[in-house]
Structures are given as C-alpha cells and as structure tokens.
View 1 (cartoon, rainbow, N blue to C red):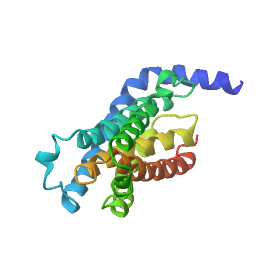
View 2: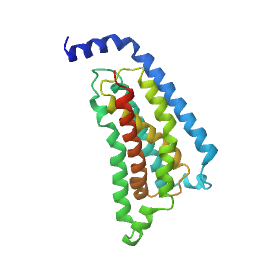
View 3: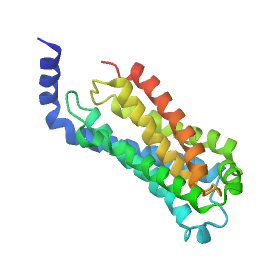
View 4: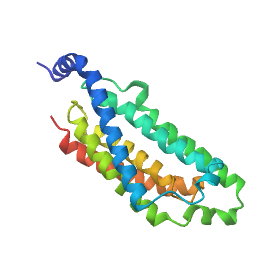
Length: 212
C-alpha cells in the first residue's frame, strides 16, 4: 500500500474519533492555561494600574494579538492532528495576528517623534519578557504535546511548532497583564522573539515526540 493510501485509510479510521480528540485537546488546553495562570498569579501578578490600562488601545491590542495567535494556532492544530487532512485556510490564520501587530507598529512609528522610537522599542522589561513568556509556556506546551500524541499528526515537527506557537500566545497573553510596556514596537520586538523561541522548541520536541 502506498504511503498516501495508508494515510487516507488511517484518516477514515480516525474520523469517528475526531470529536473525542477535540474534547481531549480542549481539556488539555484548559489544564495548561489554568496551570500557567496559577504560576503567573503566584509568582508574577497583575500590573497595579490594570483598571486604568484597560482603557488604553495599546494595552487592549496586546490581548487581541496574543489571544488571536492562540486561537489561530489551536484551529490549525485540530487539522494537523489528523493524518491526511488539509489545513486549508487555517494554514494562513496564524499570520493575521503578526500582520495586525506590524500595522500597529508602523502606525506607532508615524505617530511618535523619531527621538522616542528607541525608548518605546527598548521599554523597561525586555529581559523579563524574554524569560517569562517561555517559562509560562512550558506547562501548556508539555500538556498540548501529550494530547497531540493521542492524535496522529503526519507532520510531527510542524504540529509541535504550532503547539509551541499556541503555548507562546497563551503565555504572552498572561504576561501582557503584568507588562507595563504597551507600545506595539515593544510587543513586536520582544513578545515576538519570546514566542518564536517557544515555537522553535515546540517544533524540535514535536519532531521527536509525535513521530509514528
């Protein structure tokens, strides 16, 4: 039997279990989110001016970008977990959040005087951002990879990378509730680097743990 025929047969066999896997993965995502949130609230905490910051468009944008990235990555993972299933339009979904962030950063450069670009880009907590987002992403990533082993992704490295993208988006959303640097320039630079690192780790782990 050819490889494509084998994958197609497996996909047909797995069709009745897709709903069960969705429920399993949704439960895993919830557990990962709760674990990361518990760590965040215990060791980091919310920013003291959260109520006032909530009225800032820059602050809200951080959650639109990070949670949008999380939603897109999860939607794509549901397709990657089934062998032979095409990603379709979901393959491009994770690009929406970075595109929105890039537009916001470009608008920031237009609005701000050039002598303020550097201060908004560097911010006050860049090292903390680079360390904390990956740390908060560890448990969600581990739990999602464990759940993906119950599926049958035929592109394990890609599935692992997208799981890392989802875990990074979730961790970045939590960190955004603490971070006082709301500039899109800061978010585009440091949040992206941290999420990108988690994505690379997820890809490396997925290529080994999700093989079948």
